[in-house]
Amino acid sequence: MVLSLYNRKKTPEHIPVDPVTPVDTTGAGDSFIGALAYYLAHLPHLPMNEIVRRSGRIATVSVLSSGTQLSYPWKRDLPTELFV
Image (cartoon, rainbow, N blue to C red; front, side, top):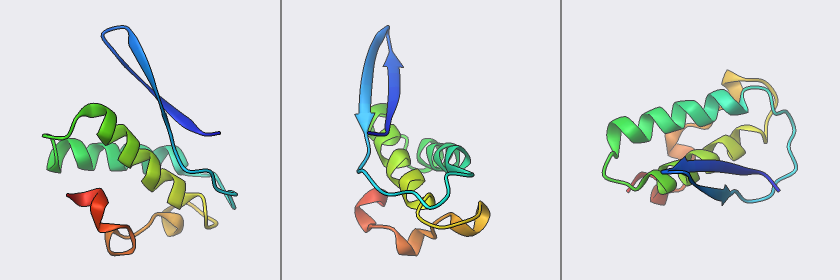
C-alpha cells in the first residue's frame, strides 16, 4: 500500500491512496509536490490532510504512464471533486 504521512503537532496521520499497478514511478514525487503547491495556493481553505490526500491521488495517476512530464495528468482529465 502506498501512503503519505502527514505530521501535525507530533500526531502522524497515514493517508492512503488507491492501489494501482504502476507503469513508471519517475516523477511521482514531483507530481505530488506540484499538486500540493496547487492546493495550498488555490484551495487553502481545505484541511491539510485533505490537501495531502488529493495530492496523493494526482501522484497516483502520474504513475500510470511512462515518463515524467508526459505522465502528469491534465486537470481536465481528473475527477472534478478534486477541485472543489
